[in-house]
Length: 354
Image 1 (spheres, rainbow, N blue to C red):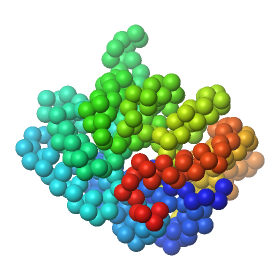
Image 2 (tube, rainbow, N blue to C red):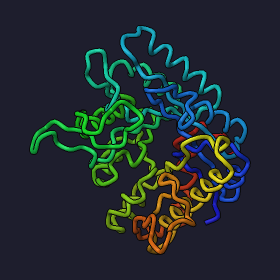
Image 3 (cartoon, one colour):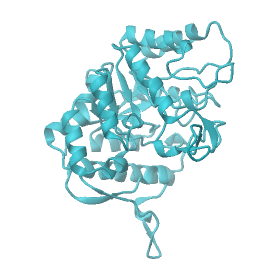
């Protein structure tokens, strides 16, 4: 499908001409989402840093936009919220289109008392209030897939986490708040700030529970979701159920991929950067096939698996078999919303030329 597409959830530091050329060729525009990783300087960080995303958007405003984040609380600081809001004002004036709240809120960050910090904590309330008043969209990645929670003891109510939050001090098997507790805090934010536009990353962490997600979309008109990194989860459901869900909530679902790179392409070798772009191209084409066609295919996730498409088979053996999926065959009218107009609606600060 030749329409312009907005990938509403990426982490792509594509600071080389070849990357911009690929996006132009594929008619893609990207919203790069910064992440406030507690263990390092999230603004200047090479992987998900706001500064590099800002520079890209400034250099290629026709292809890149950026979403900022904020410093996480660290102990008692009476000026914390004022500093955060001032930083957000500066980022918004510099062109940021949204603000990201990451999953380390609820899963890693703790208050001085030792309790986990949740999204509806009082220290974050002034930040949400400011964003609501300023009309700034919030992207919330709350929790993770439900499968990452395992009971500490069989039948018990205490849980350990077996997910991929490896950027932080959180250990696999570390006791954490329950999955339901984290999402309930997110839901309370949706209630407390009804004029705040919230995009739930990764299908709102309801990737295997479309019924539960539908209930929240019905309850909270200020809530939408993106599909970043959740194609295989969608394929897990019955095809008709997914098609019906997409049809009913066609104004509330944004296309996103979570594709990107582990470091800026300008710091890669020519071969490594070329391989990354080959991976991105293949990953995008596989996503398009899933949403647009009725074909059976496979999702390989070349980019994050760091496996080049031309290395699928070595010595006659599949190196990356991929996940089998059956395409949804969505209509062109739906795809126009999904790929483009929903992003413009839910991120009204996007450049007008988009």
